[in-house]
Length: 77
Image (cartoon, one colour):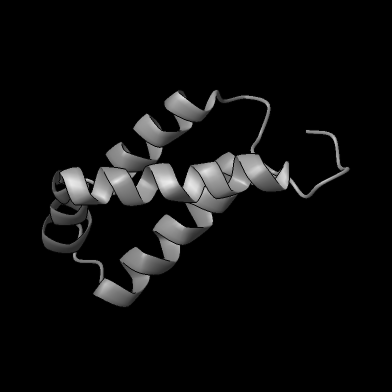
């Protein structure tokens, strides 16, 4: 999971550099939340317990992350 965390940090850092990270999050908090969103436990809950396909899981996580963290440059939250 450390590799996943580093990937999350890189993604959030890219949003910060682009000026598109939501004002609701510090970079550290955004990294923590994204990392948690991508946890194996969450994947297991969605795919095994809830019966989601891998495709649906990936789509829903991508939508969730976009809604949580991304604000187009110049647009207020």
